[in-house]
Image (cartoon, rainbow, N blue to C red; front, side, top):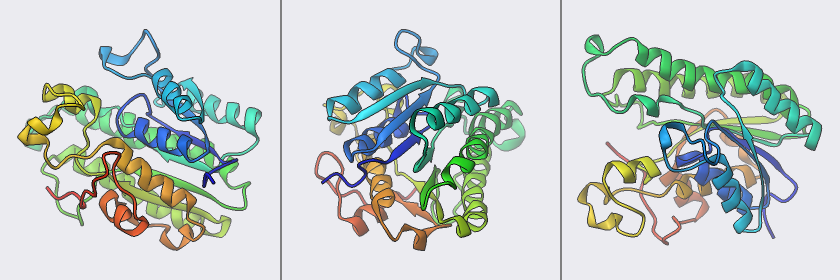
Length: 277
């Protein structure tokens, strides 16, 4: 029996990467998954691999149901429109996965803070933190109408250690704090709010950077500790299926720890320990 039959989910930023893996795993578990992002078939951001239509097609390949909705989550009117569409079509929302990020456009720049342009703030906080906050703003009234529901923010966390990238570190910790604050505000409504940290993922862009593919990634020494985006997707699916998830509300959890607790593996059958820098 599929653990999420009848549930309605929204996964933001699901054209590729973690969002895509999460959306597919939720769909495989029986949820109807609304998939948002800027990339549509024939019009992908920066011509990167992956679109919201591709994600929905893969959900359907596994017998699930997905709905692709193009949305730029830096535009509040578009974000509000997505929630209104879900209300009109489904009348409920059970699972919100805030994964939209937008800062992939910047690439990785290891310069110290004072040498980086301030656009790093604008990108990571406008297209990342604020975009997730705005999605919460419009979605929470619908989530509160259920007997119970769940909000999950994808982030990066390693027991409070500094990541070595100033703006990235600041933004990801802001998401963790957002989840914690909302967990307190929404406790009386039985809405669980958590942050989940994947490890080093073999996303489409990571594979492209390393000139590898999913069939040959093991040939690259730099990718030996990686996991697929389905790993964190399975962790989030386990949380969304857990009747006692409110006991975890407010916490930040790692994909590897969730795998150990809920007894799942990555799609290749491996258990990958919690990631460490």
